[in-house]
Structures are given as C-alpha cells and as structure tokens.
Amino acid sequence: MNKPPPNTSRKPPPAPPRAPKVSPLGRSPVRPGVVAVPPARLDLSAMTHLNALAARLSTLDYFQILNVANSATPPEIKAAFHRWSREFHPDRFYQVADKELKHRVNEVYKRITEAYYVLRDDVKRKTYLSDISGPERARKLRFTEAAELETKAAVRKEQEEQIGTHPKGRQFFQAGMADFDAQKWAAAERNFKMALTFEPANARYKEKLAKAQERNYQESKKAGDPFKIR
Image (tube, rainbow, N blue to C red; front, side, top):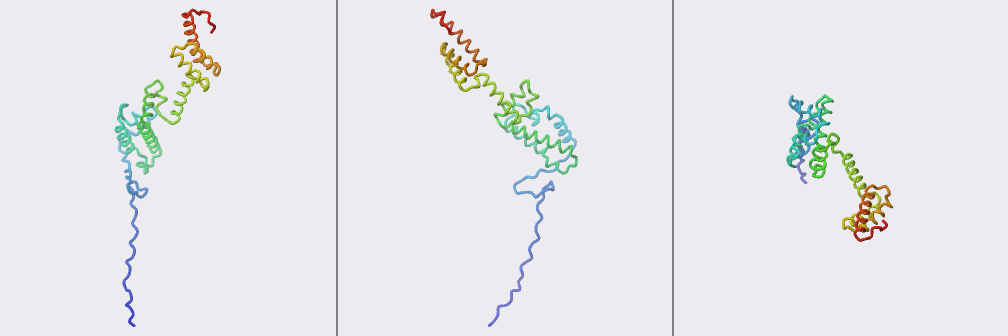
C-alpha cells in the first residue's frame, strides 16, 4: 500500500503585533471615532488671553466668558463654546510642567463649560440674565445648583408670605380673596377671619380682613344698617 507523501508545507510565521496608534498627545491609543485634542502651542497671544480670563473669572458673567452678546442665539452660544473649549481644553496642556498654568487652564475650562450648560438652557438662561441685570449682579455671576435652590427657596418664602403657610389658612384666605374680588364683603370678612385662626400673626391676612371689614361697613351704611356688629 502506497503511503501519502508527507506534508512539507509550513504555515507562515505570525505577523508581529502592530503598535497601537498613539494620539498626538502621546498618552493613549486613539479610539475609533474620537478626535484627539492637539497639544497646545503656548504662543504669546494665547497665554495673554488665558491669563486675562483667569485673572477676571470672578468678575465676568457667562456671556463675557464665552465672548457673546446677551442676545446671542443658541447656535452662536454653541459655536463660542466649541471654539473656547478647544482652545483651553486641559488635555492640550498635559505635557506642560507648570502646575500653576495647568490650574489656570482647568479653572477657565470649567467656567467655560459651566457657562455653556447654563446658557443653552432657556429657563436657566432667562433666570440668569435677570440675576446679572439686577443690583445683586456680583453675587449672581455663577448659576450654581446651590444658587438655584436658594432662588427657589426665596420664591417659595415670598409666596408663603403672600398666601400663608398653613394649608387651611391658605384655603380660607384664597376663598376670601375670591369673595373680595366678587365684592362679597361679608363672606370675604368671614373667610379672612377663619384664615387668621390658623395664622394669627399673618400680616397679609390682617390687611385683607381690615379692607373687607371697611368695605362691609360702608355697604351696611348704604343699606341703612350703620350699627351692624362686625
């Protein structure tokens, strides 16, 4: 019986592993679909701009940080954010040995990002614009979550002062206001008195009760009953 000839063919040796593509930053492989940020060129104009921004961060509002007008459109705000975030992205400065410079870059970049996330939100932008246009501008330059909570608490407190804190008190007060607007003076007076039983110190309730009593008294005089007990 003839034996088959031995297999003399050899498999080609495995190809050497490819070195991973390294990003321009020289730190880590470039992932597909991710555009690496190029290293910063520390030219004089860029350094001057960076230092000026860092020195004035505590006095600039978000519009000034992004270098846009208060009336800037959403696309203009987005374009400004992309421009400045590329310019001062911390990854561009990772090779810089100056720690103070890196700190300034980080602070500027954080504020640029903060500005964008506030101004791109229509509700927050409206509130922020109102804040920086008022007498407390210096204290309202940063729209932090704490500031937002503080604003909501102030609004809630003002509302409570207007219509009361006790649920039953508010209920009778609102009923009294409806009677007052309908010129039902006696009914308004009764409801305001009931509201005061739940909140005796509420100045708003007392004020409205006094007005309702005065209107009720005048109405009684016209009806020929000036001695009606209130």
